[in-house]
Image (cartoon, rainbow, N blue to C red; front, side, top):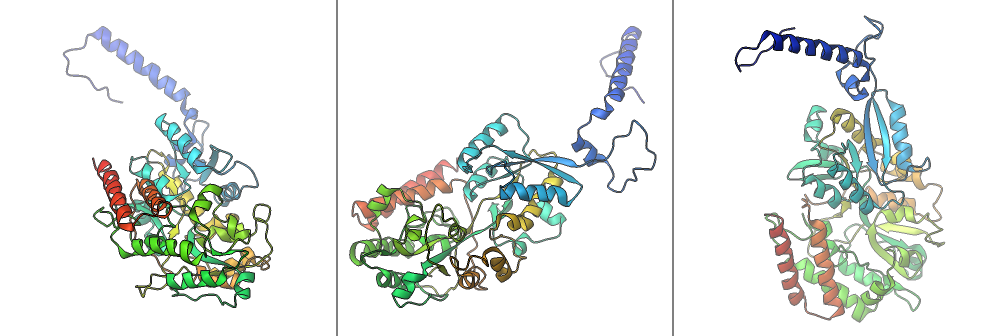
Length: 467
């Protein structure tokens, strides 16, 4: 070993002796503490092909699994499907050990993200975490706490767009993979459909057709359809056929797009004239679950994300006896594009400060391809047989779920979504549209008035986030 000296003049012999003594002491301590290295370092430094029988000694660190932590809002219970998937991953290979870290026990992703933010701010190193929606992930990505995955895809020599129906991206960087995808579709009460003498609509039906169906399905006992309070419902077209539901590519508000005036007025006409939908004021006052009125038999059809499928089996929460049938979302009246829908979901992401990024990526990829077998949710991963998956999930529940129409709807080859982009302040923009529509429908205001206000509010948010 060579001793490096400084340029601060000659070092007295006495000082040199002290330095040498100190170094000998440090080397002694290091040698004694060699077995205290973390398993992360051992797994990273040990050659993958090392022969454990070759050159072994009592001072050699054994190769072990890289240990990573997975933070989730899913409960830390054996019956939790995500927990089961993580255990299956741990058992499937001998290179990575995932520690399951549940920060909440109520599956509330908002509370979870608050607690995770506090941990990160306090210096906690996060390897992998999951979010409940896209905005939660991308907002953190904009703050630099999420690792882009592009280089890992390149190392694996794959094009992620070929592998997944949607990726969570910001500025062309992939920050998250969806373990499951939520696809918008239309659900129907089979009994109501047959009583009205209607057949399931086919791919390519329009929102004008949707209005006509709602009128024909309406009876004194129930409405033809239901619109919830969420920001998607003032203009579903913006979420299914536009790159961004509120912004153009140059971050300008898009409320001049004809679909906004069309859908706002469609909602008003169906409520005020057709009487085919429950009044918005009543919906606000009642604080319904988005699926409550449909499964209660108070609405015959509903445009909704595909988590409504599995909810049909939750008879404790949504007691009902009718079979649910499925059809694609309607398209714009003025477009010939077929199969346009909205695909969304929470993401699996890697912490920017993870010290085991290769192991974290391996876990994320496995979860994206295998966890659906435990969660029984539709994966964003494209490498599945749709009909086989649906029959495997719901083949014993055909009294409640029409598997033929569900498979046809979810895996129709025409299903597509536009090339989308996201911004980390998307939830703020969505709230502006929610408030604008509420003012339009409750105060009977003109669309132009509300459009002007929404435009100004969106411009303020965009400008505030560009500083």
